[in-house]
Amino acid sequence: MSHSLTAEQIRSQNPVVRPNRGLGRFIWVLFSGVFFNPFNIGFAILMPVIMYLMFGANQEYSDFSVGNGNVASQVLVSMTLFGMMMTTSSFAANVSLERAQGVSRLYALTPMSALFQLVGRMVAILCVGCVVVLITFGVGVATGASMSGVVWAQSAPILLLVSTVGIAIGFGCGFAVRSDGAFAATSAIVVLSAFGGGLTIPLDQMGAFFQSLAPWTPLWGAGQMVLLPIHGWENFTPNMLVNVAIWAALFIALAVWGLRRDTGR
Image (cartoon, rainbow, N blue to C red; front, side, top):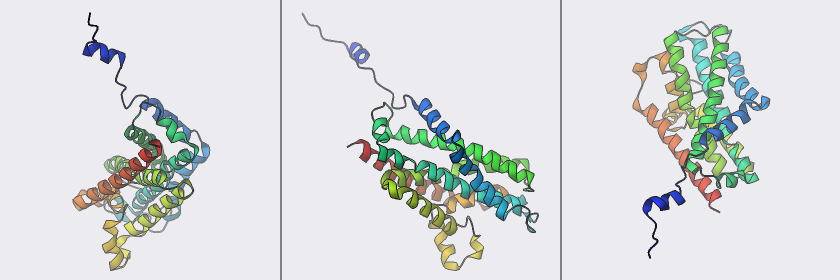
C-alpha cells in the first residue's frame, strides 16, 4: 500500500521560513542599543549641532538672504548632513566589532537573510537620524536659521534619504575591512569626500581641478541635493541622484559580499 505524501503535506512538515522573520525585533534591538547609550546618542546629536553653532549661528553673515532661506539655514543643512554622514557611517561601521566578536556568524543562524540584516541595520540607523535631524533643526530655529515651512519640511526627508550613502560607506568598510581599520577607513572616506564634494567648503571657492573632480566623489550628490529646497529645485540635475544611487549601491554591494564571506565560513 502506497503512503506517498501529497505536496500539501510536505509543505506542512517543512514550512518555508520567511527571510525577514524577526526583522522588527532586530531593528528595535539595534536602535535601542544606540538611542539609550548616552555616548552614542550624544555624539550623534552634538556633532552636527556644534559644527552649526561654530560656522552658522550668530555670525555677521548669518542673516544674509540665500535663495529660500538665509546663510544660517544653509550652513545648518550642510553641517547637519556632514554630521549625519560622520555619525551614521560610524554606527554602520560597528559591524566590524561584531565580526571580530563572532556576532555576525550568530546572526547567520537566524532565518534572516544577509540582505534583510543590512536593511534592518539601515532602518535602525535612519531612526536615530530622525532624532538627530529634529533636534538639530530645533537648535537652528532657536538661533536664527530662517526657512519657510515648506523648505523645512522638504529638507528633513532629503537629509535622511541621502544619509543612506554614509550608512552604505560604513557597512562597506565594516564588512570588507578588518575591524582595526574599518573605522579609520570609514572616517577617511567621509571626511575626504566631504571636502572634495563641497560639504565644508563651497565648490565655487575651490580651484578648477577640484571643481571638476567633485561630481565623482561619494558625497557630492548628497551635498547638492540637500540644498535644493533652499537654492531652488530648478537647479536639480539627474547627475545628483545618479551620484547618490551609484555610490550607495557600490558600498552596499561591498557590504553584502563581506557579510556573505563571513557567514559562509
